[in-house]
View 1: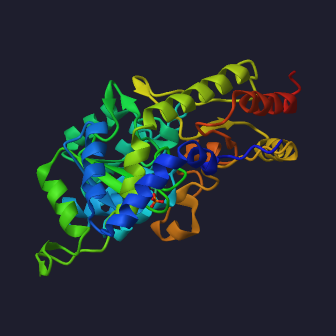
View 2 (view 1 turned 135 degrees about the horizontal axis):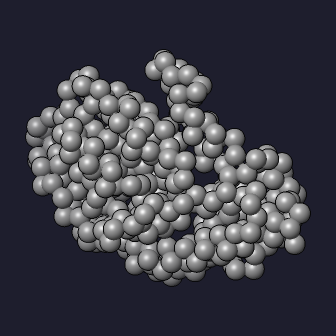
View 3 (view 1 turned 30 degrees about the vertical axis):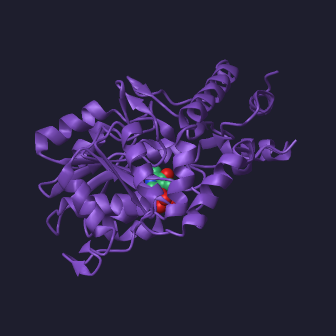
Length: 369
Ligand SMILES: *Cc1c(COP(=O)(O)O)cnc(C)c1O
């Protein structure tokens, strides 16, 4: 048996006619940039995310960058994000000419720790950039309380959390701006790079549309200098077709995650993160923490089970951020987690017997039947 971490082909095969037809319509219409499907998807994704606006952009990194750019912060503005995330979150801050400040993770949820956010605040802090990592919404009430106290903006990186809810509200409607990636392996994935931002602010929506399309109002009238960061029509058509299935796929992910949690519940060597109070996660990743991570990983690989590590090096210890002056010991929880965290296979089409096989292989490593 070979069990991959994700299987993108399984989803394509299951919806081949629908996806082929969506692609064919774009090719036939030959409107590859700003075609009808882009506006349809933006409307449907805004409605799905319970936000007033959605703007399609080129990828999830640009979504974060454009969200920050649209806020027009002072040049020395600092933005607090979490040290355990994909580097794109932090890269986008620097690309938007703001300064990155890191915060630690919470020991129970493994997501950004509001106490650590408070420690990172300075008079120059302009925004908070929490990440709904693994598909689990962060403690947004605490984040919003800090933002409210200090007059800060909240940009939530929702690249792993399409469709998740926090206290009944959809991710995409929680912050001032929410950013999404449609990288192929995400819960909602395009056939290439794609992304979006959602917001309830008419001004932010307008500003991001302008910046993502060469700062133009009319074809050759440019209000400001912008970028080329549009969502291609082919991707929009694929995403619009897939969006109709997202709730069902997320439900499958939840069922798989629950199955893992149940099958591993009596193995004390395996730690499973707590879900944030009031959150309904969408299980982009299923992560565990164990003391002998690398040996367990090897044991699983020998049985044909692929695993991932999200992420092996906290951002504050990455060579790319050495100039920020952080040191080992600055964020003890993230540093505790990094050598222990392991991602088990999860994707909507993963069959139940394979979930049981993976859980059984983890159990056998710890001498359980
Ligand atoms: C995937 C991802 C991004 C970047 O998205 P791209 O579309 O690959 O640019 C940003 N943040 C997080 C948390 C991600 O998982």
